[in-house]
Image (cartoon, rainbow, N blue to C red; front, side, top):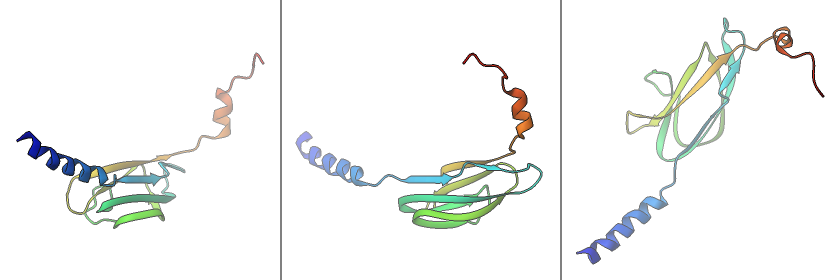
Length: 122
């Protein structure tokens, strides 16, 4: 019995080993601008998957885009506060990956100068 199941297990594991892993990137992760105004950001998306994946904005029901592969796909987006993007399979309803784009305000140089030490040992 053990001799018969061994070839079946080898075939099963070799088939799983040949499956290409999903790689997903969404950049940048921050948008700098005044917090009381929308922040315009140019997002870059890259993914490659054996199954079709879709990009969603927060909990909106309609996807922004779907496909098997995107390489350095760029699109402009306007953020108001921290925004979450979700990438999930078109076949299943569960989230595969989640990305949080933070909306940050740049500090003025006066605020930074106050924190700097004015003396040095070197």
